[in-house]
Amino acid sequence: MKSLSGYNDYVNTTRGWLKRYNQFAITVENMRDEIAANKKIMEADVSAPCAKYGDEPGGGTSELNTVEAAATRHEYLNQRIAEAQSTIDEIERILRTINRTIDGLPKDDGKLIRDHYIDRKSWRDISNEVYLTEKWARDRGNKAVKEMAKMIFGIKAMPPDQQSLFIFSI
Image 1 (spheres, rainbow, N blue to C red):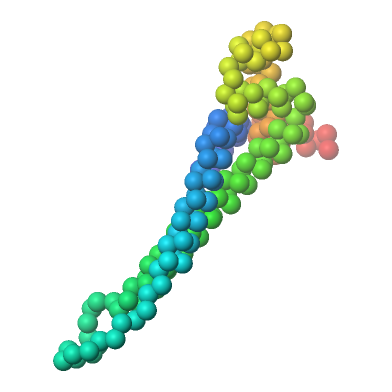
Image 2: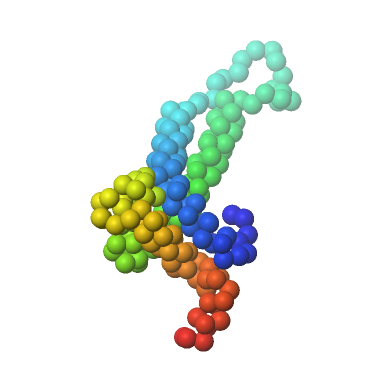
């Protein structure tokens, strides 16, 4: 992840995570399928060494025997599985963070965030559902994203002029 340095970076990162929420969930499922497929390949890849008969001298060949080739394939597949699992763990951590943070918002704000970013409803459609203006829905949603950034990243996600107030109010 790139280094975040300013207040807007944290808000933009939060907004980006929200916009990619559904993509994150799909990525996790696809990677789980890839892990399962790689494990099946390894289970089916049972190679037994074959006996070598003939006049050829043993050793010195650059080719791998069947056991060595299977071990190399398994090593490669295990590496792919470990990388996929690491990615899954990171994405799931982000998804848990988003869910926990949305749950920490006031109920109406959480609904705005879920409706707009996760369910992909327009601000206009959301405003019609709650019988308020589109501007109100958008402004309230933007405020909720800023609150989420504070919950996710802490004091560094607060505007600089509010950071000192936060420290003294503790």
